[in-house]
Amino acid sequence: MKKLTDGEIAEHMRALPNWELGTDRIRRVFRFKDFVEAFGWMSSIAIVAETMNHHPEWRNVWATVEVELSTHDAGGLTELDMKLASKMDELSRLG
Image (cartoon, helix red, strand yellow):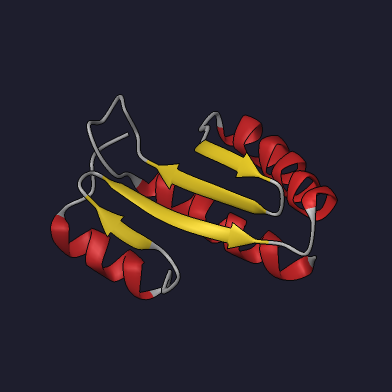
């Protein structure tokens, strides 16, 4: 998987308005109504991430899930990060 160019990253970020761009990673905080909803969402994402063979860095405290995405093998952001971020957004709206 190749690292995205700055232009490609900017294009993807327009479709991911709730994500913050950092150095070689994107970050978002998801807030849910309670722990069960947060953990259920994480379980759904775990299945998606496993099928993509692309796993997030995340931290869960009660109803909050902090996520950071980056492709370590590529040394930065790739299509996989953007696709997983988009799926996370999609599944967070279904709850």
